[in-house]
Amino acid sequence: MRVITTIVLLAVCGIAVGQADAPRDKPVKVFVDDKAKSFKPAAVHRQGKTYAPLRAIGEALGADVKWLEKSQRAVVCIADRCTAIGKSEGIIVQDRLLIPLRLLSEALGCKVAWDAAAQAVRITRPPTPVPFP
Image 1 (spheres, rainbow, N blue to C red):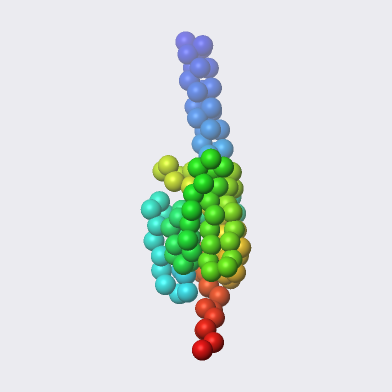
Image 2: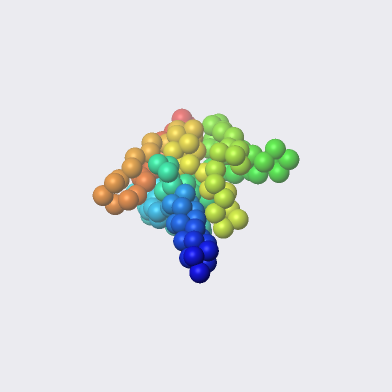
């Protein structure tokens, strides 16, 4: 009987420890130029960073996104500004690559602000230059 009790206690402790180590994703709202954006899977806050699906956030910022299968990287471009994002820089959620919003947004010249009260990220794109006639 004592052996069974010990095994049960060890199993319960192991489960509790395993749960403590698991990342806790918190849903986050994302606004681009004050317009709410929704993504599938949703943007999440994990261990001090906010992540969103690579292609969805890139396109929400007005960028072209190209996935390079061989190198497991994406090239994301707006006008003449490009950045490369590797699979290793993100997290996988529901079989999708989510990347840090600040990393991509700032690389493309956007401003990023955290709104703690709303649990939201606010991204402001740089003004589009007006062509000279």
